[in-house]
Length: 610
Image 1 (tube, one colour):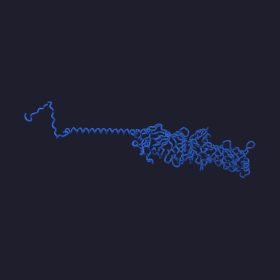
Image 2: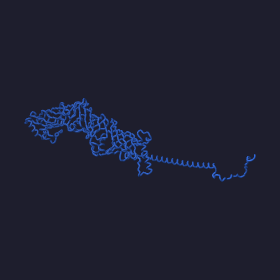
Image 3: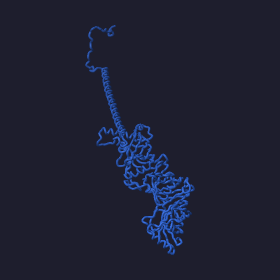
Image 4: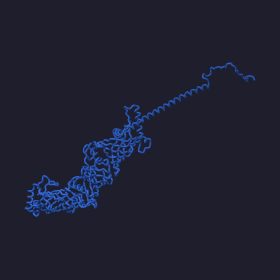
């Protein structure tokens, strides 16, 4: 091979390697390969810096987020702790706002269960004040600003809470006596809206609510009346509400979201309530004595009529209505009551049921309520006759009678009051006279005087009492006057001092058998004409009035028409009332004795009367 094609042998000996000559035009940093390597180093460094920066940002973000979450958890825990430590007094006095009631409707009254009412009002809960979440720009620092902001956000998210159904026992303590239970109230579940920083100048932030409540009053009627009188005299109502358990959960009644997990449970809650009594229409201002029940009721009409097997009763009364106009009540078709007469014997008071009545439907009108009542007398044992007789005697004498009212709707709840007296006092015995009266000496030696004749009177019952009567016996107690009877009262014995003109006293030793005939009634009640014979009844000349008696006898003898004598006194009558349902007994056992019936009249005695 020749020329340039001849391969050159490479000597692999120890000869030094010959470096290529350096070209001055060669690049200082090398060629393309060198630049590529340097670029890769630069990219790796940039990526490394970006990775470190991203890692740092992620770590910082996660750390910050964790700090925020921990802070929020601590804030939430602090609010939870505040909420858990709230007492009922805190809620009532610092957060709860109640306005009303704006309306109260009595829904139903049932025997053994109680009174269902619906109370409409306005309610709100200032949750911000309770958990210290209200903003205070002058005092709040950064931490408080954030903490309270979180609290307000949480309250707005929660929106409302629900108080589950609960039963409260209302008690009071009067003086040094033991606490007395007034009523038990069962309240349906209530949704209470939550508010943060409500306006202080108005109550526009409150929410309308309508709450059903079951009220079961105590069976101790005297305790209720004592509480009412004491509270009115003090001007305040002081009660303690005792609840076995109060349970509250977040959200509404049927809320099943996360809000319902917020729960609070308080056992054995006791809350003292003191409220000023407002002025009520028809009653004296609080701080004075409360009028008795009978002072607030006026009996307009009262009627009794004879039925086939009973006495039928009806009455119309008006009662002062102290209930505010926002309380609405429409009575059921009938409100039943039992009327009992009160007997006091051996220093012990007992009651005997005598009548069952019911009210006609009524509403709460102002200023007075009109009550129409009807019913009948119960079937009575004959042993009740003396008690019923005493009641009627006092009534006809213009006196009030103690009675007791009860209702099967509230067993054991008895109210003591008085049946009002009639005004004016009725005059039952009228036109009293002694016909064919004769006076003659009697007794041993003729040193006594006796009287004979026919006692006549008309028994006129008060308006509305239209019963059939039989007056079977009478027992008169009579003062005899020379001339007309003066205007004086007479009891069951000659009064002291003796009234002017009175000279004799006539009182039989026992009842006189009588006969009666019904007459047509006029503008009043039943009318019965009564006659009874007196024969040789002692006529007692009053002490110191012998001269007046002699003067009267002289007028009888020498007067052209005899002499006019006035008679005045009281009488008892034995009456049988048709329809009065006595279940046993015979004869006088089924009669009623009406006593202390006053009368006055005149009798003319001629010469034939001596």
